[in-house]
Image 1 (cartoon, rainbow over the protein chains, first blue to last red):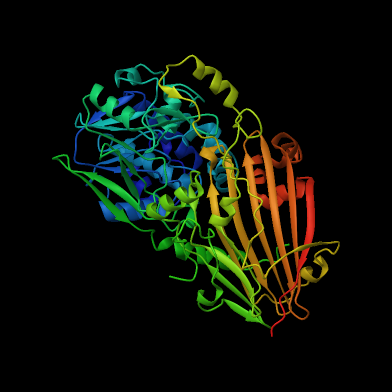
Image 2: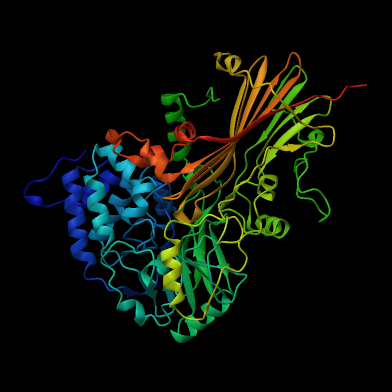
Length: 317
Length: 281
């Protein structure tokens, strides 16, 4: 681990180099990074306007090797501009390394890296789905989890590319007709169970429907073709870009090319066998899904772990 | 392709295992063979066809091309696959009675009543937890099971006999919109004298409910003894959580561990059945 530096200053380039090598940073460094990130993120609007070219990334879920593979395929920052659509943590083995690296990159290149909040960037979810356990296991306590989840409260909710493409983690909300309604949301808090903030990070498109529907689970929305058309028309936009749902081919385009899902965790949970993609939006507005497969390092790591723990066979009953 | 394919006609049985077309078995022993397949999740096209067929939305991760088949040379076989497991999920239901709801559903629904008329109620409720009583797909009418008072001889399975073949195959999994998990997986181990298979449905709805449905298959090669045990377990989330030591700290580690949870849940129902291989002429 990298030791604490004097005077509270952190050498970001050094941190990034260490993180590319998958080293953990000291607890005090992580705390310092998170508090600096909060100072930066608090100035960002709930709706950030950016310009293409930019590469848009979907769910990563702690699949660190695959994030590096994505950079190999799409270009390392700052040579490529990146917009990440959330769900950085949980499920995969390396949520801490993934989140620490993205935080450092954001601090180092604040106008070339944008981080949107996903539904997993919350205390409630990340306590149950891996990030909390990983922090306890790797640091022996939950301090790093506390620092990061406090920082999550500051992440923005949406980004607009070239005034044409509206980007969120999940989807639309019946409480949000105009993008201006997002600007007035008080986002500096844990993601609530209901309301516009919840819907933007949780909802899913339903290609079979026209309007909003209520999920069969008894909470959460789905939205259909007519809702998408109306939203784009009212806000004078051409396309909705979101993540949040696993796609076997790494992406899915719905509603006559009005909405795309981008998914960036190949072989999700190390067993789904799916592809991943990064969506490259060019300076002239063309969209290209750059598809990639799981990084070879995953298999090496798995074999290493299997040897160490002898998990190949078991006498289950 | 293998002998394991989508049916072409709607009238066909959902999935059927044509054992002769499955290719080489993973292991064979005294007339018994085990076939297994581990493939990526289904493609969008495959999912579309399966959805039409089953008439319910597919789980988020569906391994429709995975299977484990246990077959005897006499023609007896029992296979395990995702589509047949999903076919037993309740495809209709009333959200006000019977179907499980997420923990914050009532609060959420009350709030919704105040909002606009654009929102439609749940159009076609089904059991979104994908609870299934699946106990395997028999080859044909050659295979039948009858209740027995015998039980699976666990003593013989506890012996550290060398394992000739082991596999662990996921059939489907759904994160229940991050409200928990449903996972159906099949594990098998083949020893020199016997084989043992466990098909487990595991469900956790956060702050609501745990549910396990286990199908265990035991086959003794020497006398072709076949025993299948089905066990249903269930308890509230609160009751299970209470069983974690206070010093444990990280509750999630326990609540995500299906094996630990299985030991905490009371048995609601269990029975054992036996089957006999057909006589070879």
